[in-house]
Length: 449
Image (tube, rainbow, N blue to C red; front, side, top):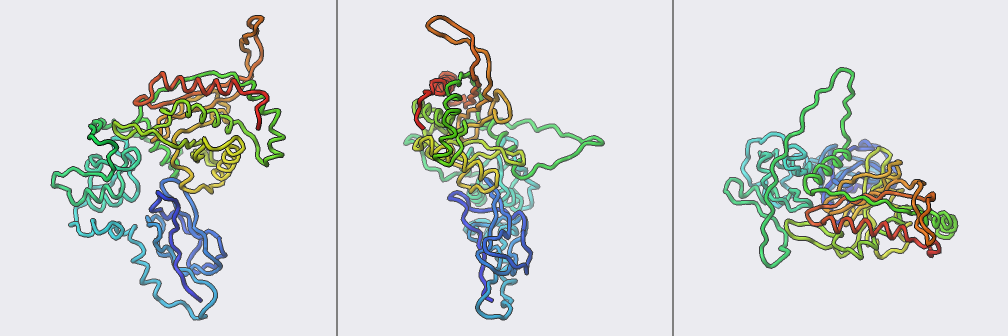
């Protein structure tokens, strides 16, 4: 039997590590090619590592809960062929070296931590600090082992998304700890002249404790729900939210879709839902008002070149995930429909890749799916705006005609536009949602598809 190592695969350009959630196969189990052997999780999405070919799982080199770097060996795997002798007892010796993430993150940090003198523990570090910053499992592990307190972590200027402290930020801080030197980041300057940094936010009041009473059921949040909770709190803490509402008469749109959806599915093999129609209108509005398609870095506004539309999708667990349609402005209606259907189906099946749920520049969420007429969506950081589309309902409405006003039954819906008031004022935020409504209302009954 020949013996190989199974390495943690690359899961996206920005994903460098993953947490081992659960081993699906035990040591000694025979597995088939492409059969999942272990569940892993990143900060973005859960996934599985399959067997490379038919064989036997000889040894698990990492344990459940360990944080593993991309490219690191996670298991010894035996395949048929070669010598029939049992594998040499070299694998057990490799196991301790293959578990640096669980025992000490130092080997993956260019020696910064390994040379530091031991520091008494600073106590457990919470997932979310008083300022609303989220700390990843790896950052919390390093902080606890190096005795870095929550107050010190809060003072570190993070280079990650939304000011998040990364592993590199923490490791850069450790050598200067206690010297009075402020931690620095490796961000490239966005302007020739230095710009003032925004003042640090005041610590938030801690949430009141809740004591369950007799008969109450205590349900632990799963990993995804915790990530969503932290992200939503961070977004509210980061951006002053304002929401504008518009009611749109989408009768023409509904009639057009009813007329073409069967022919569209027969020709393209794809169902035509309302979501790609909404996205097409949003993309057109972004082209006309590009300052909605921006991000904020301190006092700098970054106008994004690409229009990448995130679409919130409900999972069977009740959680939400936001896959991204990249360069949506370069897709026609057929392309948008295919992307929407594919991403939604793979989201429900848990088959999304980490890169497919990041990089969005604007998000749309269809609250009408749940029968809601409108909502006040929370901005998906680091974006600055998000639109909620409500349920389409038949309602009596005033119709203006050359002969005078009449009352008729129309298909009506609400659009809700939440935006970051730091950079999107009411004039722009309100005009944007009004423009999207106009595009939907003016949908031609003879539009090509």
